[in-house]
Amino acid sequence: MKSENQKIRDLIRKYREHFKCSRKEIADLAKLKETLYTSIEIGTGNIDFDRTASIARIYGLSLLDFINPKQKIPEIEFLPAATRRVVFENKDKQFPSSNINPNLPEKIRSILDSRQLPQQFTTNDIKLLLPQDLQKVIARSRIADTISRKGFEDIVEVGKIGRSKLYEIRGNL
Image (tube, rainbow, N blue to C red; front, side, top):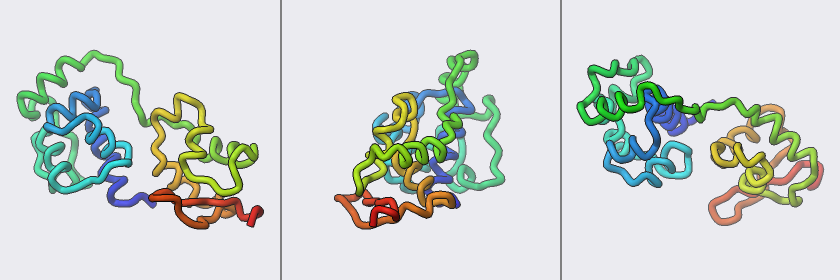
């Protein structure tokens, strides 16, 4: 089950991809640093009301309208002028979706079965063993969400290293 923060991150990405905008373009429109916007979208940065409201405003929506599950994505003509200009520039652009289906659980299982991980490992250890193209688009939080699901009962959390959770395969205990 997705957390509320993850649902908002997914919504932020959904709007950006719908209008074929880059993260930099959305960050500029929302008056956020690109690194901050990217960290919010991919799950490494904190989501807060002010930042989410800034992002909502570029689509001509209030924060409450933006996060309302029944809200439809606005038509281009209803976007604020600055956003509309960027969207029209991108209208015919081919934009790769970051919503690729990498079959992450299968790839993680294959990494676990390969025994390339140390006895105790973090999600970053797993990420570094993913194919290069996936390393760029998969957040460590997504890996953590995946290994906490059914099918990964053999993985247990055994501690922390800094802010990262430390895992171990149950058979190694």
